[in-house]
Image (cartoon, rainbow, N blue to C red; front, top):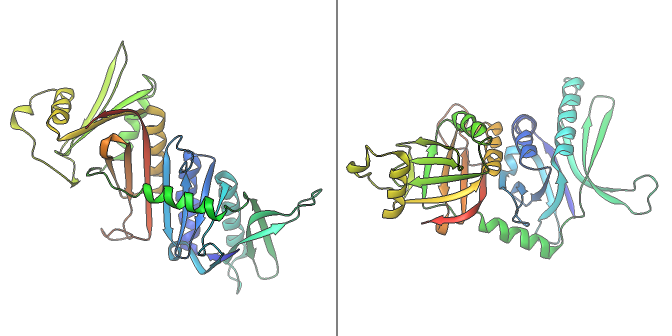
Amino acid sequence: MKFKAFLTENGMHLLEKRFLPALDKMGKICHLYLTKDHAMFLHNLLNGDGVQSIAQFRKEALFDDYRISSQNDDRIAFVIDVSLLQRAVRSSVSICSEFGDGPTANRLLIKLVKKLPANSTQPIPFLSFETKGYKSAVIQDVPISKPLSRAQVLELQNALDMTQDLPQTLVQVPDLNQLQNFVDRMRHVGDALNVTISKYGDLHIQISTTLVTLGAEFRKLLVIGEQANATAEDQNLTAQTRSSRAVLRGDGQSVQVSVKHFAKSLHCHLTKPDCAFYGIAPQGACLTVIFQFFIPGSRQTDKSISLHCRIPVLDTGSS
């Protein structure tokens, strides 16, 4: 089982400045899953508890000279502490900068190694970062779990495959900061959040307690997938009534999720997505958030990067 690659300058920037800070907010521990073509950071895919986040990169988005081999169809997966990984990448990037323009500077080698820790008789696996300068090299080792067995990798792959189904209707939320500010206020009111999405392009979020009801509505959003025209007679009704009628007509779905989980998914804005889409899975299985990234300087989707979250529901809601 071998893995070795050089992290590119673009890869350093993506991980250090954008993705690792966001992933660290999603959870301290995640799976790093490496295949012949992709590197993936996966949260909560096997335990089903909490927000599932799936960050996937084509190898070219992060690496040069990417080499991987294993007896499991060249797939390797292990558990890693995101905060330790973030610290190692940040430190390595800093060292690269200090080395300047030597012939091998700005080359950050990442590889899987086994080393014998002090006072131990058993070697343990590490993800090793090696930064070479003109006359010296700095090595940092991040401890990882024992790589997953063939059966465990298959289980992880099956769980990953199950996260790929798109909701039938997705609505685009152009301003994540506005949504974040609203949810920050909501989290002091209660623990459960009702989310309704309609084929008309409406997103309605509401939190209710015995004392107070607080809600927000985003209307006439861009719709991808199944859509419908709003009924004229509903236009002057309250947001809550409009949402309820859309669900009754079969033009909308409603689920209840944890405010804490919803807020956690919004940390993904640290990855600097260009837009985000919300949708509810069939039968109200989960609330899905898909983040989209554009090729710099264009409006074209960067297909080398993908990120989405699946927020578990507290109640199956109505469909």
